[in-house]
Length: 135
Image 1 (cartoon, rainbow, N blue to C red):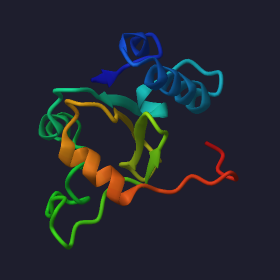
Image 2: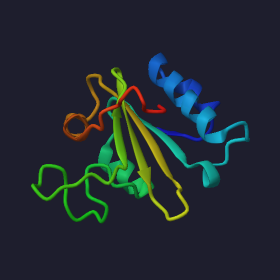
Image 3: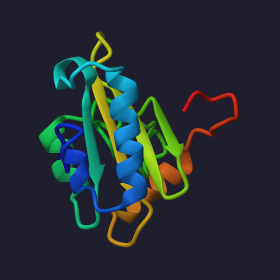
Image 4: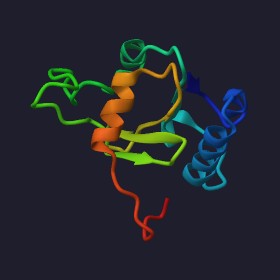
């Protein structure tokens, strides 16, 4: 699900993920009104969502490398995400898709019904969060 504004985040059923998404909106916008062109796109993969459909809709390579040439599982696969963070109840993936810094923040809960291949990719390539991390 694309989250087009902080108000849209209220539709996220998992309260922990909703809280994290709202926090990221506040951090990215820094008091300005949200503008997708300026602040990027926010999205949540929920149970039953198709990763392939998400990739087609957004052009964001989730289970493919940056150029959609190699898929997760191939020994040459390298995730296109700048970072994959584990927040306990969910993963947060950060994609920078343009030279001006525009991108996508993608969140997915660690729950039944979320694509198991996507969860496996996140678990394999997760970026350790340290105490010094600003997130």
